[in-house]
Length: 508
Image (cartoon, rainbow, N blue to C red; front, side):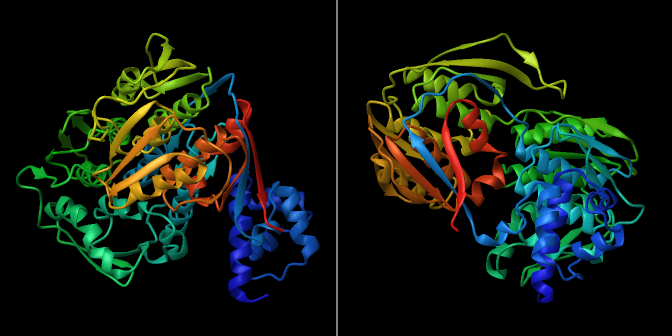
């Protein structure tokens, strides 16, 4: 085996071992070998027989050998009627922000019920390379994070860092840890400067300057510079707001952030910072006032709230299949506009009284959907920053509009070209006309019929196609579904618990 190939297999084995929550020592005992042998295997310094690979795969309940066999696909038999109840999992975007924010704390952070998705796995690899110890505590996906005395900023895992979009959120916490450091990022140098600019505008008041060249952020910090006046964000972005918040958390003075995002993941980050002893005022508004601490060293236990986008995915699944299901732990305050829009379209549902999420703040309800005949809304559907209709929820209205009677205009003004992927629904029988890169006209009702589609590279449109396949007559195949695993944990399996017929397979 070549060194690179052995290294890749070693990484796969390490990932699978961590996913099972095993130490190297525990895996060694299962295989009747030494911990040093497991260490060599994971570092890619060991030749492996197929028999040994199969034994490791069996011990880790993971098809290590098959992982080289190419991408996974989904085969969907429809049309489906869903029944039963399902709990919404915790927010992917909050989990990612909290992993980055754990770098602010010199003590132990325990996060409850973290989404076990690819983006989180990659971030754990990056944190591990910096010397941070992370371990899954149990089957509930509770995660323990213990930082080292000194972070190894020169040892960052480049491969993992380039496979996540979230590494830019290390800039806020790390600017207090070193006067100069480098971070690898995904994509070529051309986009680098442009995408980093809103973050730079937010972090420059703390003395941070970043040059983006050939896939690396080169960061330098001038300690003499401190925020002298409010930081005004030119775009109300979630990750930009989070970076500014994390930079402010370790700045002992008071920082005012204006035009801040008040979205769900930002609120979770604020609540976590409050547990760390940082004063954050204005949570849920567009002006945040942060009084930071010079040093944060506390043992903290925090439970991120449930994911409104996953809740919307499950709602859309029920609506397009005309099913009655109960969706538990829905973060209602981040879905109120979506539900009001759906009610205008004729959607019927019941909801329980509100109760509080484990973070002590977010309002939850249980929703029971009813099979409803929908009609197109009178007005176009378009997203807005919170408290408007969530940008990530807009694509779900494409498949919902496809089963409604009449014409619906969707206006996705935020992303260049994301709307184009929604035209893939035409392959299943929908009438979706692309008016320009940001607008689609959808005419319903649709009688979906099954076909084979390659997964689009955008997460939400990929899920939208999967949901349409649930309502399609016959067999559909969705190919190369890695993008769905980046943002959802076991989505196909969880839909199957509600009565869907989705089978995962690989090409032999």
